[in-house]
Length: 165
Image (cartoon, rainbow, N blue to C red; front, side, top):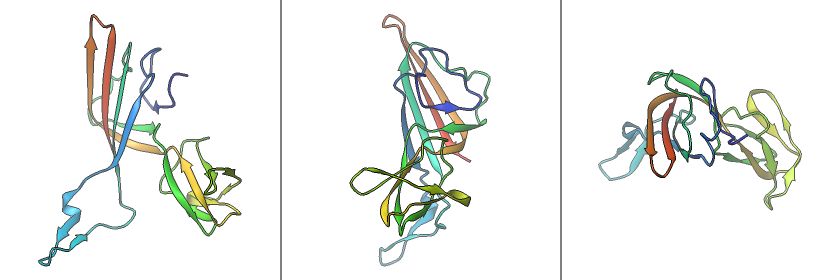
């Protein structure tokens, strides 16, 4: 396996996805923020409504099989980027579904700890403080795809831009 990255409906031929990089960021929506006449910045959105945007880039010897997918197609992305949340009073509600096998819990010193998973992504541990770490599983829409090639250098690059639905 060359990469942890998996995108449902996208094939990764050999030497097409080694050393991928993923930027994962909250979608910037300037309409969610307004300033009062006193200059105080207000947030007009609801907590928990945050969605992610992602740019995945790679430089290898081949490109993924994506030419059959139109711009705007919805795909399921098993991210390579991890998210981390604090355990508060021994539990936390994960903000996103995680990629199977990627969920871990650890204490404040970085040592892995035992945990249980309940309904609705609730993670519980016997420790009061610690962290939950996981790779998110996101439904995303393809915004753009770019290919580049260095003919003499025998290198191919690609970039995939996605936004969570």
